[in-house]
Length: 95
Image (cartoon, rainbow, N blue to C red; front, side, top):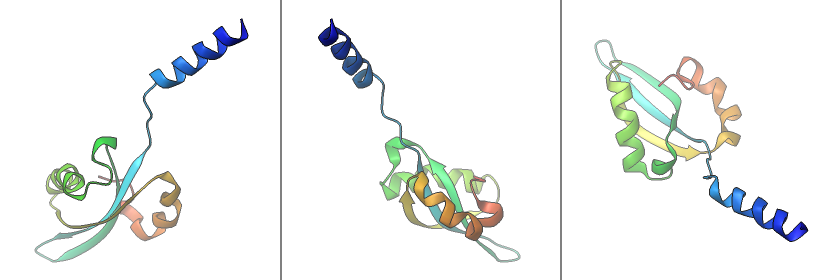
């Protein structure tokens, strides 16, 4: 009986997709007048760690609000949010 319960528990754990939150920090600009911004945004798991795909996901969000993405600085998990929150200010998880 124990083996049956153990096998069922393992099968259930394997059936649930793993989901890790992924974030990027970035630099963006807005013209007329020139404004520069540093921000932190969440990106989807499939693009995590793939700079071109991260850029492709984030850039349209920024453009829709008048910003141009200059650079993705890095990608990281939830453990990196705390140290970046103060630096990102109003741009922390905004886009």
